[in-house]
Amino acid sequence: AEILDTHIAYVRPGALTKDTLAQFDAALAGFPQGQIDAVVLDLRGLSEGSDFEAAAEFARRFCPKGKLLFSIQKPSAKQERIFTSNQDPTFEGVLVVLTDSDSAGSAEALAGTLRLNAEGKACLKYSS
View (cartoon, rainbow, N blue to C red):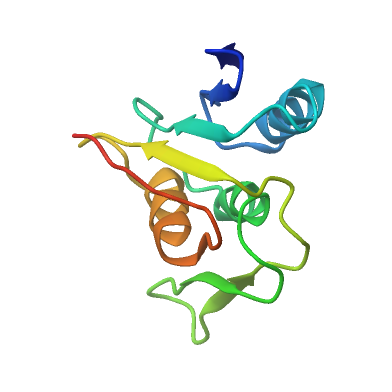
């Protein structure tokens, strides 16, 4: 994570796991409060992961409380698993999400839910 142009936070988690979520939270908390107008969340090059709970936790940092984030239904399961936002967003501002053609699994779920559910001043952009 780093600050670009004194007011834009650039974050590239490397993986969507509980460990990187803790690092992500520390990075967001470490940025000067009130001086960050935008976050660039770079999901390019993430390996295809299946930690959808971690993806939902990342999404909760940006999506309003009470929103349906996404649902997962495995072929062998009778019921789908529903992920919702259960907290107020940690960051409210411009959000830019970078993806590429290799974004899949939990990274793809995160990008999709941010595109649909991040509200307010959020702006999502995708690259390929």
